Length: 422
Image (cartoon, helix red, strand yellow):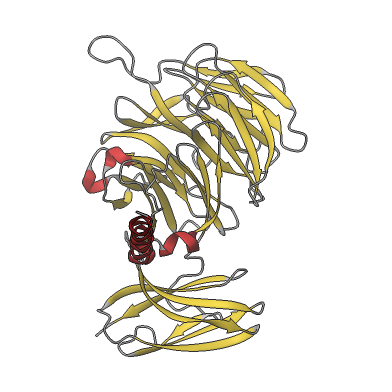
């Protein structure tokens, strides 16, 4: 009996070992992408980076908001009255607004980011929140109305009623998401009737309506010139609009019902899209319309909210009860980079030289990855001194296409784009 037990256990461990080897390539990206993860007590539905890129605010579904540092330590916990319909820092980093709720018991709060002391609390049904520049004004988008509050005086300075039209039964549709556009002094919002609207605060009227249908999340580019929004078609699940001309400049395919959150990169070249059902975070190149990177976790998880750090180093994502911090793996990827970290010849058909500057002596791994994030092969793995290095790699046996060279150690990470043409 003992001999049988011994063999059974060893067979089990052997199976586990072989299975881990089989999955090693599939799981390779997780170790490169993920800086850290943190479990939370409640589901995360809102996330925002502070402008200094060192703090992250996360709002849970029911009641509280957490402030994390970039190392993953929870520094503060701020309590609300209902669910978090919005979490946003002012662009100067002085204030934070959060809270809301779809019932009258919900409340919106504004706090001072130096002391985390409450400056304003207002009780009202809230579907979305936004700051107006760095003034003392916040926009509270309700179900069918908009209120602009001066949070220093704690008073309403503008009230806009009937912002959506009633349906055929006489019931009103509801506002979904609202943002402020300084380019034309407008409030831009989506609603459950499928329309995207621009409310001009100067003229006090809706001066543009797009019937696509559109609904769900909105994102404004850092230069305030472009608007990203969710569409109602798989052929153009997410679209990017020029705010001045109202022209659609790019469309991205996908499962439109799976789109949850949108976030522009700090330089405005890329758009991060969080998908729920397909359980992936995709990075799209706005100029080319191509998916340049995908964050796919093992085991698969859906992403309910995302934000991009202002220093372009990280992307934060929240799923059910996990906060993820990812390395931005494509910082510096461009055609014809001029710094020392480069690839040549690029494009190539036989061999490429990987050139990089290692800031600190460390064990370094260099991997060739597909554009979908799968490990193709390990090119190099050994200890290197600090300084300049050149590593050659052959491209024999690899088909034509776009790839990534990922150079990483415990303290250094660099991603370069490689084009193979045969």
